[in-house]
Length: 67
Image 1 (cartoon, rainbow, N blue to C red):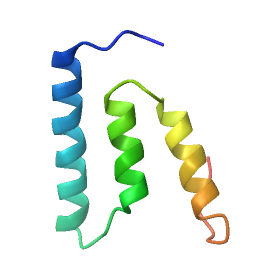
Image 2 (image 1 turned 135 degrees about the vertical axis):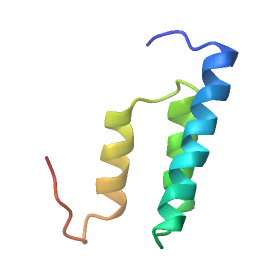
Image 3 (image 1 turned 135 degrees about the horizontal axis):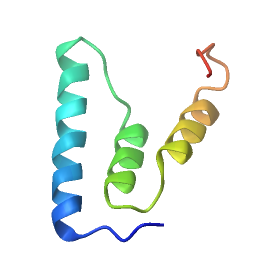
Image 4 (image 1 turned 180 degrees about the vertical axis):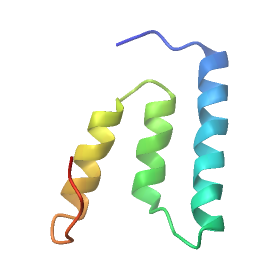
C-alpha cells in the first residue's frame, strides 16, 4: 500500500465528512459501519475494493447494483 501522510489523512477525512454530509442532504443515512470503513480507507488502512466487499457482505440480502 501507498504511504499516507498526516496531511493526506486530514484531507481524506474532510472528504469523507463532506461525502457523508452530502448523503444526509439527499435524505440518506450512511451506516456507522460504512463510516468506519470510509475512515479506515482515509487513513490508508484499507482500499475502496475492501469497502465495496464489506458493503456487499453486510447487505447480502438486499439487491444491489454490482459492477
